[in-house]
Length: 276
Image (tube, rainbow, N blue to C red; front, side):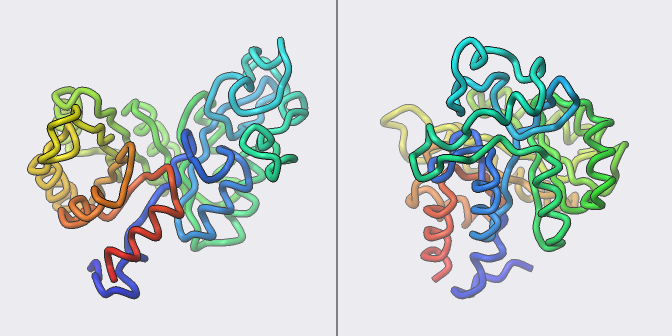
């Protein structure tokens, strides 16, 4: 049962440090992973595979946006590069001078730490990996129950669940088109949410001037989706883009207790104030 006592209630809210646009740490680095764990959250690692079969943490297909790689290597797909080539470049310096020296981590590097802390969890957001190789690596470290596999393709979630039943799977549903989001959710309901543990709905702001409710997905819809997932023993997660403290209480009042956030420290402080 969720407790709402001021000192402990906020700790019962599960949250993912959404790496793609994390504004507090350089994304997909060991520093960002440790940062989320230290704040009490669950880091996200976007996973890709190099030419020599190493699974790494990287959102984009190339090194251009997040590293100091020079042209033409910055435009070369990492799937055609070796892990050693990828590790030549700095993944922290573009974020700030104090982050100089951070490298793109291998998933094995992250799992080595995760395996030492059974209380910790990790989101793996699928970008481009061989799923059997991924399952083999997770199995080798014995951390399946600590992993949440995330993707927007139901077939990939189902495949991972077949390979590793102990891994939790999360289907994320884009939110720009509310009708499409609701159709996707209904499709999963018709399938009895088979092979899924979590569904994440993206919350996109409505147009300016329509502020009786902030998001394109309506409050009654989120309430019903939350109750339905609870009835199935599953969880609803929301990713509120452009998060601010004024929008959080309404989502918590609905009963949502799982979030994905771009500003972990800001989010945790807002949680503490809400439950206080």
